[in-house]
Image 1 (cartoon, rainbow, N blue to C red):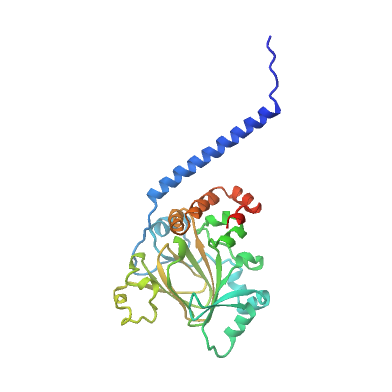
Image 2 (spheres, rainbow, N blue to C red):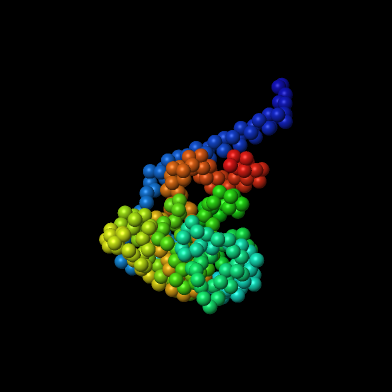
Length: 326
């Protein structure tokens, strides 16, 4: 009769390690195969339009099929009707709740010419009788302030893979965040495409905005964003005469979906408060990773892994793994 000895502690540890390694290896293999498949499948797509449709009672499947999967803008009219922000977010509210906080303010629509002001100082400027400068508060993130972040809910149409990452990770490495935009009549964010192949949604709380959008293939006639769409200088930019824009007026309570790499310029027709998000998900992730590779090959591999294995990312970030490598 042969006696069977019990499994030793070390055998148990080795067996557990082997199983964990096998699971991780399998996940990594699946991840690599999926990335190879996505690289072949996902390309920038867009649909030329003559006007931007307004839709309500839109299901996610309809949104995906008719708009996001084919790169087509749309205005969603009822996705923010239950937001507390729709009634709470006024100039007085921001002054009382966030007055001492600092935010970046853009001067005369210039990305490079930025100032740091408290919210109170900015609102005092905005409500003054005379404005000798055009200042636009644009870099203020409700993400960091629960009293603001809880006042709205991201619509179901816009899942964001970056939400899997720690907040501090997103902030440190400048991955897409949310933005509150507060500006007076005449303020404009110049003609641009959103960076990194992200796409965007813009929710208007108050005021009115004039929006002009252009398909991604018009970069040449738009002079890479140097044209002021609402006051074009055709002598300086003659090719702009060939540009084909689609314009709309965004009303309070409406959300504009701006697909990846669509050129757009937005101007306030009235003093306004708005909220904007940039998004990475299955629609544009591979394009984003390829764009990152041009500037930082290492980060182009780190970010997909971080998004695929968020629990590992949180653990490593908590242990200052990433900080040591910046």
